[in-house]
Image (cartoon, rainbow, N blue to C red; front, top):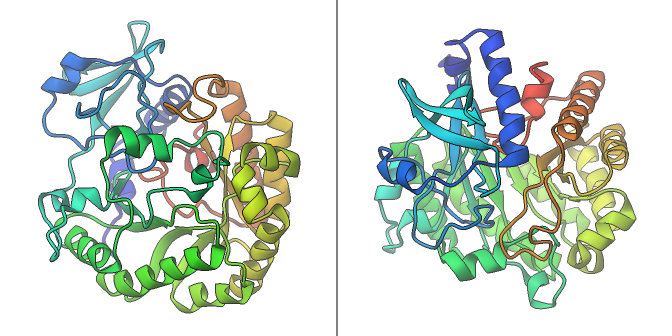
Length: 392
């Protein structure tokens, strides 16, 4: 069997080197990096920030290319968030790049190559870069609808910048067609290394309409992906009003559905995600998880949170509650987004918060027999894999 990207990368270094990479990733996700217009302008062709749904790059004007992620030794990918006040910076080194903190080298780094499928257009003539990108090194990713109807009614998730990001950068087609996305998946498989799949639908006021949009796209793309009709990865959406329709995801080969709560407990969810709370509802999401666990068994559904928006004890309680329910808990580290409702009024969590939270997640994974279903070359804003491997 062919080795995966992460197996190949991890095999090139020892555990201590991967541990250094993991700890550098903690710092990068907490602090971001300083902008460096000269460095980014001189680097060889790299995978630039796509601005598909968020914008954590402060002070970067529309049209200027900055790296989307860095690859750290051992196959660990980390998202780049540009923040002027960061103590961290990227600098050129003998082997490529290095991450520095106040002049001290923490870790070597490299930018990820630009996806080759971005050089193509669909049969309808749409540039594929406006339709999809790679999440990390090997995961084809697209938003079926790069918008949010909760924004329209004044109730977006408070950390989210999807609408202002599209208004500023205009980098993607807002409403993609199933045919365009099918062509894009085929081109990505032909031209690049695709090991995972991640799709989100945007946010609709009517969950059944959102669900139907997903089904139409899944039917179109699944035959163009390399797993014989299976969708190896994550489908992220809000559950339909008619929960019996979730059976369709199982029949269509979706490996890991998720209905992300973002915040815990209920009162934090309702405060931080007012649109989801009003138009979907906390109880409806939990009922959807129960239905999926009945269909798939425990350890297949995923629930994502935004780590750092609530006290650590509350977030740990949320992880435990989901794990006990048969759902794998996970989180992306909170980063302030440009023009989100929160803006820069809330900072990213501390390094200690992140390490303690993900160690708690790893303890739950091992206790219940769960595994993070992406790997450390894909989960660029999370440390679930690094914690699971005891690298933190």
